[in-house]
Length: 477
Ligand code: ADP
Image (cartoon, rainbow, N blue to C red; front, side):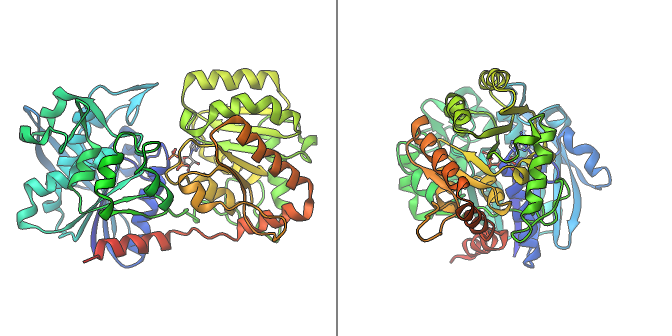
């Protein structure tokens, strides 16, 4: 098949979160399965140096954005056999320090930026000498592509459009007056179109005008049809459930494999767990925590510091977790208020809690390898990647049973010695602490712990399976 993938970030070019891992790995896997894949990305400042050699295919991609006619260029970079990445360049919009904003402020013109990007993608396809069978758009930044495609090119050019929701909490909401940037007739701004409680909702373009809808785990596909998780779109999603599918993300085991990981102190697998202890000692040392306490259980967290990830539960629970005998290491960046709270706790427990703020890929790998347990008390988690990485690194996950966490982590059962982690249901500090206590208790029972670690390391969430599921949706009659 000939497949177009459109998203706003992609490893190894530019990443702020799990979306980048997914676009990177899915593109690569589909090409490895023998399909021709073109992935579209905006040409951000952060990308420029990495693609200096990419030739310009067209410098005259012209699309309307409201009253303006905006010109962009496209650059094509071959990355593997059958796989290309096409970068859409428009320096006024994308040559900036951030992707979506700076500090904690979004760019004021994000609707214009991503509407331009989406329209430019559709307008670029004829220049690529590539007749696609499938157009697969991801998240609100690309949600407009299927709709624009169907309005501008569809009659001459039939293809299947697929839209994937990575996180329903980010819908691309903008003031109603920005609807004019879509260049759609006014009838598209209604409850049955892109309007959402008086605002413009760009994600609705993907939900309404794509042939197939997917989200990143089966559990989340069910959850988003309920009021608790539906972010106001549950009714619409229920109405479109016939085309909604859950496809669990895979983990990129080329990047995340303790046997070959170049970022960690010692490589290991389930037969050489002594080397995992070496990783733990190196991590404690790097974080300024006492290495002589390496015998104590170490709980790691790596994620955006936002309420969704359950940080307020963690902040409240830290004194008790410390009393229970564990050490904690946290890497993340996000909400300044939550960051301050964690910083204060780290000052209070300097030998038991280390927090690092910022985005640090290398340290993320070292945390996965060096920690004994990995905590993800998410309020919601469409798929979650870190628990899959943790499983592969034998770092037993403690998670809230929601979304993809519920699909990938099963409770350790000491009787049968089955299960790969520890779960809790209620989104409360007490429920989380009870799961942490169970994990710490199991840690003390050496044989059970080793079994839980080995069960974790035996799990396989490779991309091949997910890519095959997407292919069957691409080909569905
Ligand atoms: P989300 O997409 O909601 O942020 P995921 O668990 O799906 O959460 O993916 C997060 C990805 O971003 C993982 O690959 C994780 O390792 C990485 N990540 C998050 N925060 C940081 C950070 N501060 N430093 C390095 N990597 C991070």
